[in-house]
Length: 111
Image (tube, rainbow, N blue to C red; front, top):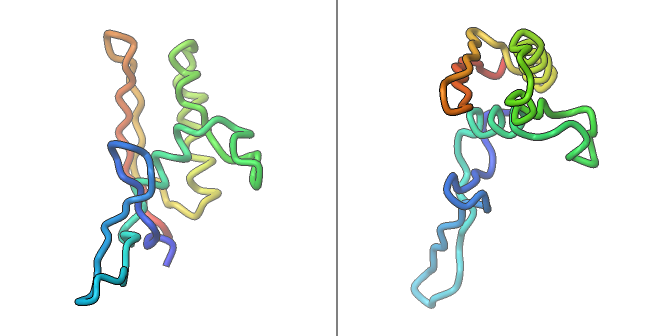
């Protein structure tokens, strides 16, 4: 089940931890496990190639697109990277907004 895993806190980027204790005060759980499809998509799109030492080919480096005008190249990179991770990409659009912001619409699910 690729879509289930340890979640990351969206605000801090750290592991999502919610400590639970038993009646004696001993820790019985902590790491939050849940659906990680969107989280994995965001990490792959944001991460620069070479950033993950175990798999240096993984990553799109979307922040570099702000300096580029080739949206088609980045659409190809995103689709390629997500499919390599096991996603089926149903819909992908990239638009440069005013204020140098990117609007990425992505619908992908693990196969």
